[in-house]
Length: 355
View (tube, rainbow, N blue to C red):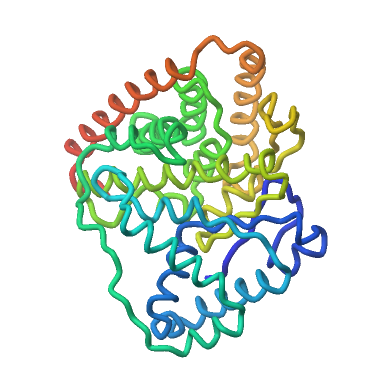
């Protein structure tokens, strides 16, 4: 599977860094590496002989590293490293694993491309730092861990818990009506219309073949279900975390991943307008969604988009007047996550072995 590149600020399809430099100066680009890319690079440094046996992966890594050096592209791996170094049980940072990963990536990127090729010929192996904790049957306490993802996770976890329940609601046979119910949940209970969660809801409920894999783990325990939804929630914070760097860093953020579904979510949204004041965004950006990625019929699509438009008209005033403090919002979302997590556990208990 190839590496995929996407950015809210680039309308053209990006097949490679080389292609990206045809319409952006390399000095204006900042690559953000997904967790999976950070892990591949860490394992390549630790055990290169094992990495190069996967010919497709090795070719993609070589191309990425060669182009980073060739065009002198700035790389940010902070988000991917942090996500890959948190414990299974409580999302606490594993300091030893974090330091190991950071040191490895620093050492790797200090090499030039020829040195990396020479490194690939080694049989070098070092025992990795491992997470010895286990998955637990609640993620509510994990929401309190300080991280890059923290506040966004209150929103993201609530959204995907609810979406899981809506997706499996047999009382409502219409997937289009399920999507409308989900949009109402976002507007009324979450009180935020998160674009990445709207896009994923459309992909899942319209029947995109890859979408269900994000929230349905192979192992059917409560712990694995909740951990799978938690990981998916992390993935859906990335469009916000990466894209907002444009304001602070003054460079075009480009996300790199091997996850085709995550790339599809990223690539389905493009910034149309943005209003800024120095290093701050003064209003939420106007973002276009590419509805051609979804599997709705024309009739279903008209029904959903009409409802979405009505919600947005009602919410326009909220962009100007904020009636809720951040602290109050997080308290409300915390309670919502607790209720939805218990609802999901109840559903799994009543429908053991349902898939």
